[in-house]
Image 1: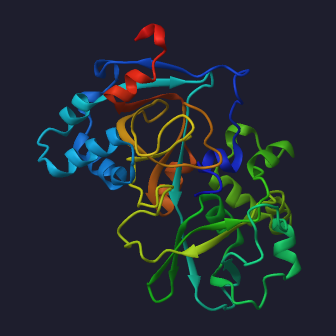
Image 2: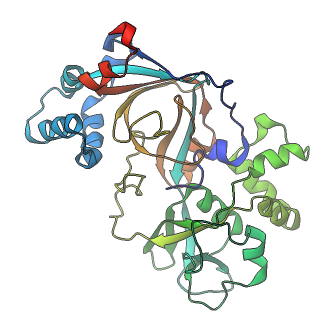
Image 3: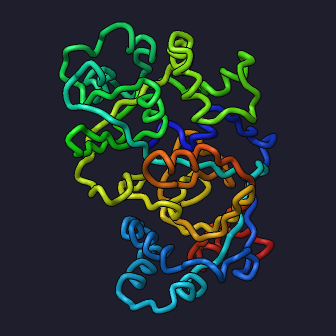
Length: 347
């Protein structure tokens, strides 16, 4: 689980709140209503669906998963069209797509003059029921010093901050080996956007804020930058997840590796985890493709709110951090489930 999703959203941009308590509506669509449906790579979407469908316990989902696993599906598009129906779920809030990624940091297993910023495991006294120390208190009190909780040391507190926002990442050591870390827990404090704080202080206009802009500002202003990071009281701890092969993506909310540009983080109160989701993302670089809802996050709230996984490293981070686009997403549900969700008057 990630503390907050979407580099652009989590670091500096706001999203409209609930639309005055508007009720959730559901509309049954046809596949012909999906813009660009026929042109997508449905085989790639099916491969991603198979990554997590075995974890779906409901009989209709498990039956479809078993069929997809055992049959030679020469036409994956036909599989989705035969056994699913597109359902548009809306709650009155505008659609918003952001992006997330897996950061890669430089680090060391031991502290050095260069690598002095610790990446901590979860301390045993942390509980889920009550907030613990704030980010500033953890960073300045020495409460974690000398306890053997360090997984590694990195060279930049800003990069560690971004790693905590994403909730997982890789730490590349000087010998070329890699430590993979995943979300281990948090101190229980709510996330506060440091990008929004820069806007409040008059440093930037909202449209200027991005992950790279924030990173550069903190590095240019080390004292004020340290204070800015303390504005967010939330602090994330990690665990090693080196059992995940290096060539695969980090673990998502379903405890399976996520897939670049095929995994979507959603609000599970509206979209069931494991479900295929047709994405119609507009903006400067429109996207039309079938993705799978395999992840969640604290910033992802709403029926039309989603986060697209872009992959690992700085280029993926650049693409994810600049994304904040409108559009539409349509959930594909097993046929009987889709009809059961409709209002009685439409059945």
